[in-house]
Length: 93
Image (cartoon, rainbow, N blue to C red; front, side, top):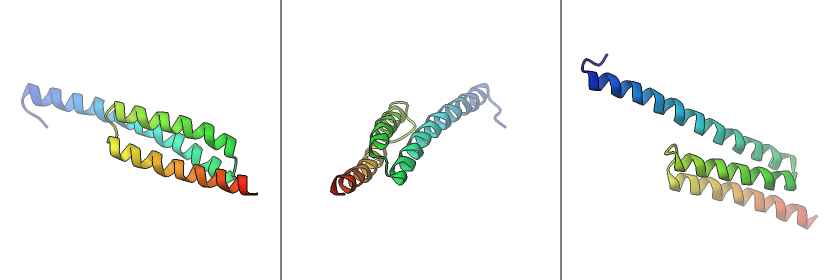
């Protein structure tokens, strides 16, 4: 337990930040999971829509400091690659 007033305030601030970050990351993961389920189903149109939403959520997480920008770029790149593989597979058949 912190003794000084400034340390007590720091604990309160850290808890608020932790909850805020957790909410942002949770929503980002939700959008990503929706995209992955659309990819698994093979629905290219739905996957494109979900990719835009997931990409936006990832960018918001970066803006709010919940995610590093390179981590976000890597995640978006991998999701885009999976989306393009699905698009190529549907165009092929």
